[in-house]
Length: 158
Image 1: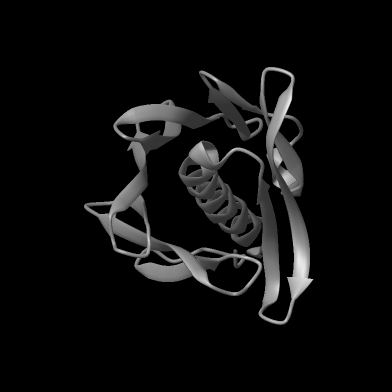
Image 2 (image 1 turned 90 degrees about the vertical axis):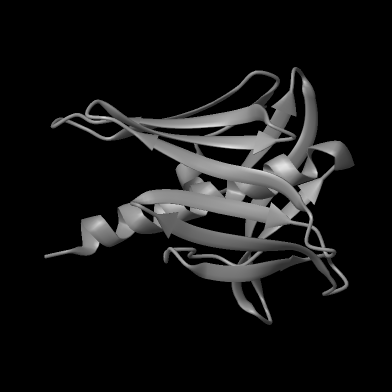
């Protein structure tokens, strides 16, 4: 999967190791609300990421089949910006800002993410050990990359 998703209204594909398109990812902003839609090769929606912003926090939700799989929350604080990723069943086994972590179901590793340099440029290598979790993981990596890239842009502003 390519890196540095940053623009609302961006579309890209996720390929497998044989360079075949497996998922399409669309990033859209409607009325200042961010939506990321993941669809399969026949353009059926398989996952969606939505955001909810209040005065106290930003919250992104990754849903598959109208069921919340992950919640990414940022508390708004003048002291520090902390993001927390939680899931009812799946959890991250490291700090997501490194973009190198495992996704766990209890003690079982269901996926891992690593930064990789490929012929297409900077990318993420996502290894999924349990296919039923794949759409949620693609949604999670898409929103984490979006968050990370936008946080880096803010810190590079002089």
